[in-house]
Length: 434
Image 1 (spheres, rainbow, N blue to C red):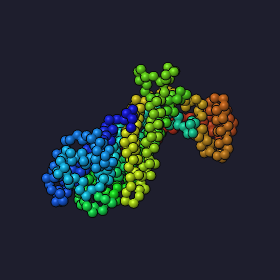
Image 2 (cartoon, one colour):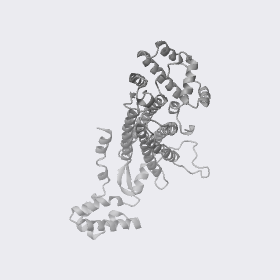
Image 3 (cartoon, one colour):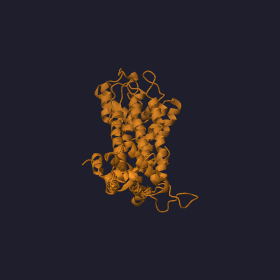
Image 4 (cartoon, rainbow, N blue to C red):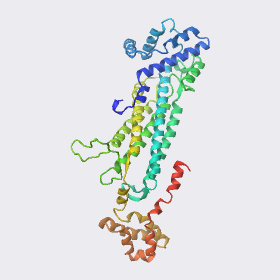
């Protein structure tokens, strides 16, 4: 992933140095288990740990791989250069490359999941704070981009909180599902490696043994993991789209923070563009781009092929690094987001009283007017407001059919803004708890 959209902790998980360190730990722990079982001499297992403080030479491993055309063999050759050929002769005993590659990949995905879980927890804290801050800040709700009925900015933040809270649960589930390892040998039968070796290695790496692994860990686990990343990315875009709408000049109900010295346009000095949330929309597309390849990786030939390998070398780092960056960026946007309550009220009253049409419709039906007639009475007055920017309440008071069913006091009562916010506390209790 390019540095522009990367954060160091997530990048470090996918560095060659980290990968080779995990490979080494897999091999060393396997040697320990085999020594305990009497399969290899204890002194050979202990000799492997002589490399525990070694910084593996990535360039040297690449040099060896240029000859061997096999990355695991290149690493094992380099390891023997540090441990000694005789001491290292039992390394990888009974194992196959996928035992190392798949177990390492799942360790990396598990560590990436831990960072993403922390990112989501940070985002949830920001959303909750802003939701409470603006619990009673009234704004117009929209459907199809058109004014609907009043809501509050706090409910908007709470809605996003609830969605991200579901994503946190999904991410925790995805972490649990991907946290498996396999040290089962060629075609997964344990013919040349005792299952207790697998149990020991997994225990040391914080994994659980894969129940049945053929020669690879089943890729439906990975498909579920990357699908979860894709869902989280879509939720990020969901929030970003709302903020982008709010920052439009004609709306301006909220906006990204604009820092001192920031420039919005190379040509127009007046511009304040929603660049961060537009960027998040783009990053969400890139994370979702990993989902279909991950699902296509599920179907492999027989006990193993490597059609999934090239895909995972790309989507593993790219999707997790991008999502980590996007979650952190969105948290920053929410934390510093500017809210303009006055503009919210002004927008809601752009067509005076119009957003109360349903209350009037319901009142007319309760007063004995058929729904068809009531709808026609309300709509004809609403259309006058659309066309002439008149006051909806005044139009209703001037309509003889309406006043025949409702008194002026009853009509006036239907324009109480508090009617629409009376259950905000109930919703907050459902989202955030009592």
